[in-house]
Length: 382
Ligand SMILES: [Zn+2]
Image (cartoon, rainbow, N blue to C red; front, side, top):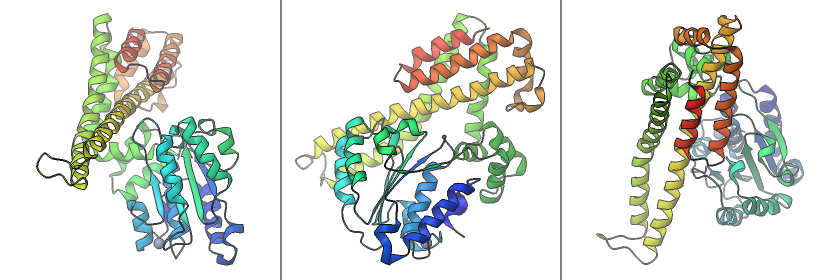
């Protein structure tokens, strides 16, 4: 058993990491052997942050990543004294956060050979934060290792990526994800294959689909919108339905966590009744602001997921139009797909797919969700 077992279909990356772990255990040569900054890239769902966390475990585990000792388990739980996991839920990582992080990262490791910092969304560093980080990556402490993750190389400042050893992960095959769901999550084969196929090899989404009926229902609802689009008013209706669904999911996910965080912070500031110690209300306002940012990002993430599903739908429509209906991603919706394929032209389908991808980009650039999706639904209307 090893922490690297969870990296599905990534043999090249795994072998580099295992070699680095072996080299790092040569204690006499700690500083010479170790690369101090690594960059993991790969599309969403390829497991780039899992790879970084597994590597962090292996670096601090006495057995090189056994996945069962206290060190390994506490890294995964985010509670290891020498491993820091930075998972931002906001839209960006700001310079203050990075400055604090840098000062903590300079401490000597307390139990392990290394202090490891994993930044899961290095693409969300603001420019000033990235520049601050660049300075420490240029001259890292001998016992600090930085593991950055981002979707692609282009998402990271060139100056940073040139200082990092780069590892690129790919989307695992549908077969590999199916196997993982069956073996690790004990999902029935048919459901596992369906989840792996419609999520297009995104491990996290596949697992979510396979274990959560609500998510499967949500997907069906999204994929039925193309058939709803008969006139302008139905396009507006479909848009508000998609945006509301994303908001609702984001809200239900945030609510419990937000309240618990506020409660915890209040206790930390020694709240008695409604009174807070000095500075407490400012800290709470800051936390609320952060939570709001996180909520905005969640809505956008859910909408993005819905748009990706829609893109696979029209991809299927195009396959049917070109006479290749054997390889549908959404084969459970064959009749809807065939219906739309028979009533429109292939060139229009391609334009629709492009419109969906353009909307995804616009949402990523902070476009107002409802307006962007309304415009899209009007374009998708038959
Ligand atoms: Zn271990």
